Length: 208
Image (tube, rainbow, N blue to C red; front, side, top):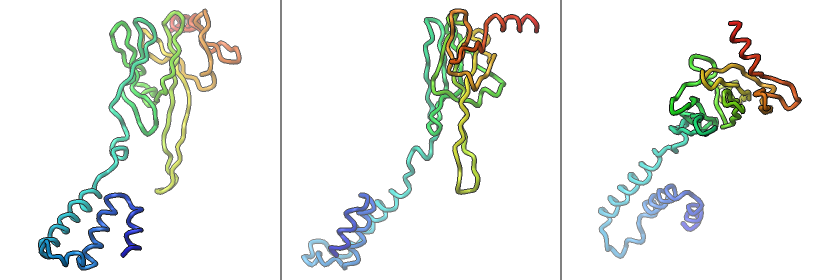
């Protein structure tokens, strides 16, 4: 009896309660010899407790298992009139999704109808000096299942240059995301290479 009680003390509360009630039943209620409660009624009370505690508690599922996607949004303020708005958050991947640009209170969906919609963000953003372009991180995460039991997480870290006024992706990069904007509104990599130039973009648009 005492050995069983010692084992029960190391169990979670609801499991320990179940075991304790069942243990009392197995010992034929030796403590009830004082006959304060009739045996039949006491047995009925114990059975109700077993069904209520043991039966209902086992059906509880942790909320993280049921809801991997959190209904949340966040805003990154770039300047007095411009902001980035992410409409949802994936708790499992720890990434923000559904990017829009808020320009003078008008919201424009970024990358509508393109592959950019499948990418997430860790909330990196770099606005050009003329406030016409912004660089954001564009991360892809997903589990690859080798078998029914085994899976591995694959991650692809990239970034994108967005035209603020058009809310379109004008360049996607993977090697030069660690750059900075210079005074000429050029995105320059850490090695000093000009990756994006506003003048070249204008020339390209004229050619189209």
